[in-house]
Amino acid sequence: SQQGEEDPQALSIQEGENATMNCSYKTSINNLQWYRQNSGRGLVHLILIRSNEREKHSGRLRVTLDTSKKSSSLLITASRAADTASYFCATVAGGGADGLTFGKGTHLIIQP
Amino acid sequence: GAGVSQTPSNKVTEKGKYVELRCDPISGHTALYWYRQSLGQGPEFLIYFQGTGAADDSGLPNDRFFAVRPEGSVSTLKIQRTERGDSAVYLCASSSRGEQFFGPGTRLTVL
Image (tube, rainbow over all chains, first blue to last red; front, side, top):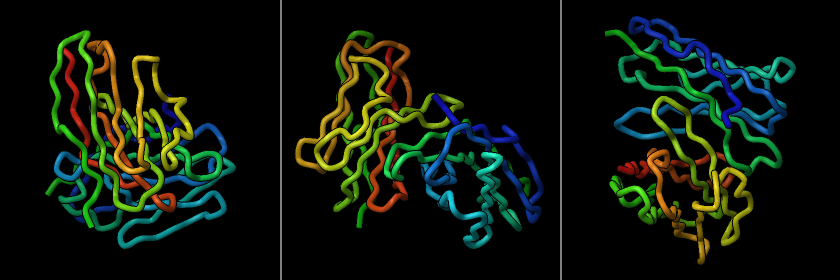
């Protein structure tokens, strides 16, 4: 079963704009991770945020986590054509080494 | 070093046949995971190994699915009496400290 629900399911923006994707989940988590998937490079880990963290940055990526609302957001700033991909949030319960529970993903298209 | 590798990259089989999918994790990673991804969906967890033992196999859909990791490195996912509904991309990942590194997957097609 899939715990996360990404919103929107699809997003198309112009190159240079910012892209925001949201994720909601249902149960308590140890951490939440964001992944990118495209046909050329498979599934790539982007960023991990632990349940006791509220915000994290990595390059052009900014992730927030609100455990009271069981939600997270991924912001990609100054988007590039190469950012076109599907983005998934995935949660980990328990001690943190358990399997990931993925959402259905947001398909992001960056128009040149 | 090399990333996670999976073989074969593509496998076409007939309904009722037996298949084996192989995963070579990143050297030194003690945790290994198998996932299945259907078209338009996110990956779905199947099983997780810590060393040689299956720490969590709650995601295996039924007893036709089995996985082993006899020496704590390479893992094989085995599917008996394949069904058309087993068609999907099977992904393997390995981890040492939480972040999971994924292989390119094996696309299984059951005719």
